Length: 132
Image (cartoon, rainbow, N blue to C red):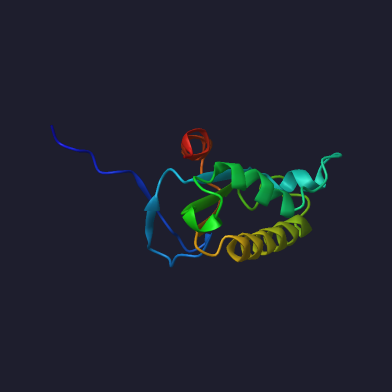
């Protein structure tokens, strides 16, 4: 029986990542976060403060220290979703993701953080459904 190679994803130029462009990462992360930035500006959803990510991520850890966590992926919609008539929202979401990236890399310094925007629904569903 031939063993299968694990599926990977490659860091690309428009990703925010603590790994350099071209790095292969596991396709299924330890933690997956689905974040639709444009929803922050539509209706009455509001913002989830980043500090809440810590309490949501910690139960997913194999031990009580964040150093055991290896991969955190934030999967988000395309930069231009719901922005055709509101171009100013693109810059707002860019800023939110920049701050989220800084927050996650600061609080989980031994983890690989990847923020990817714009993959298709099916490509996002596997990591979200099968995260470790």
